[in-house]
Length: 284
Ligand SMILES: NC(=O)c1ccc[n+]([C@@H]2O[C@H](COP(=O)([O-])OP(=O)(O)OC[C@H]3O[C@@H](n4cnc5c(N)ncnc54)[C@H](OP(=O)(O)O)[C@@H]3O)[C@@H](O)[C@H]2O)c1
Image (cartoon, rainbow, N blue to C red; front, side):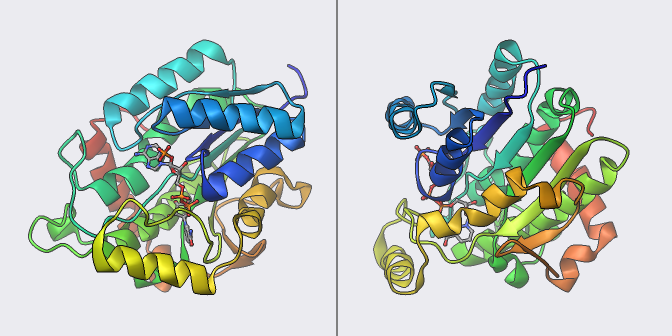
């Protein structure tokens, strides 16, 4: 097996994911980027190749809110590559009005959580085929305000864009801890992170007052996308965290996540429900 690391970064045509992919390419990795748009992927691949002089940058376009497209992405990946060293689950968004995915699931939960859950499960064999793999899950400090509302997980009765976002980001942390525990006898680590408040396109998929508020807030209080990608890059590459797993990071340091995120019964129930919602028969 060659020493070149194979990395898959989702949501890598903009913001934190794009800087992460670019930096991994700069460091000599083979990088596969994912986003919905073939056009944006093509442009981003060209840009990264030009900026890094690394020719080993490719893309697989997929709408990660759709389970069928996640299956297609995983199949395509497995067709092309023998193993996966670094998986960065990064694609995510906030939806100020309730939307539904192709699977008729609430969009925030489908994209921000079920996508991480399903893609990771489908890529577990290539990850196991790596001599030392890392899974990096981009969460948010918004998880601290989150609750997992099993009585109305799809927010059918009451929807708040911020509430759905916080729930999905708590789900990222619960998923990471459960995943790390299930992978404890393997050479795969799994960690979650908060990137900071980062000036990206985040929120620009929305219209109206909330969208304006998010954009203004990011303009006034944010760090750059370069700074915002630092913890993702650190977790993906640093020898300091080679054997660190099941942790939550902020500014490249281990931090306690919200007390609710350490609730193992909650994490285990979320895992079961996620299996049902993705119709996975076997999981990690
Ligand atoms: N920005 C912040 O302040 C902040 C703070 C805390 C956490 N985060 C987290 O950081 C992550 C990245 O956020 P960002 O701020 O970098 O966002 P961003 O600038 O809006 O970029 C989002 C990326 O995800 C892709 N994407 C969106 N929907 C997708 C879908 N359905 N399928 C596939 N790809 C999709 C977008 O590409 P296409 O549009 O081409 O599909 C784009 O490449 C998210 O998980 C977010 O929750 C961000």
